[in-house]
Image 1 (cartoon, chains in turn yellow, cyan):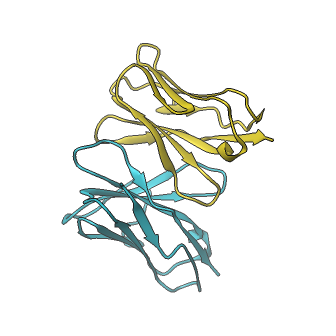
Image 2 (cartoon, rainbow over the protein chains, first blue to last red):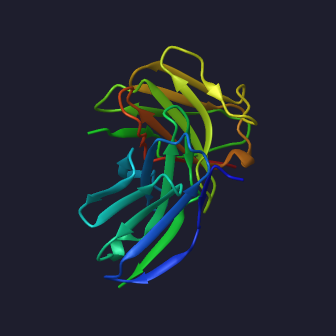
Image 3 (cartoon, rainbow over the protein chains, first blue to last red):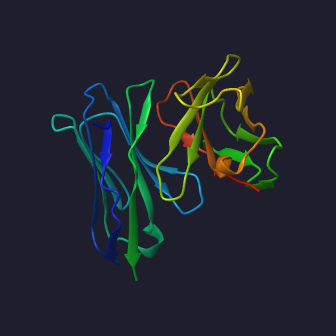
Length: 109
Length: 115
């Protein structure tokens, strides 16, 4: 079983839709949770970072962590074509990092 | 803040030659830097972790004599691909981490093509 599971998609939504991206994990030692956005042929860009269960909001993005279910989500409201990218979840025990395989998102104008 | 640069962004080299890729943290001191490899439409594959002033820790299956990593200062790490072969062609990405925080900041990546 992989440490982190992420549906690779691809996911295609119309502009303005709410997007939900998810990852599950098996290691209860994970304490830090991150979401990265990666455009084609570019390095990943940190979007959200949290270390506790609950929600964290930043503009159109909301990161949700449920440690009891070992499940994290990223919600994108009012999705825009510029949100089209691959989204990677990442988790850390503090020393070791584990990345999901990434979900490819396309927002259609 | 937390900007990481990589140089070059793209390099083409002939089989058998060596290529050096630089990773710099521009506005912070990175106690730890990571080197990743990424194939098209695949996720990041961690190659090695380097701490300033000490030897890099390589992931299983990564040849340390082929992928030389030097973390000479708190703002610079280099990856040298020695005796490159076409199968080494890939997208190489570095990231850096500040000691007090947990997240990693990534560079823009270097696309290596070995002909």
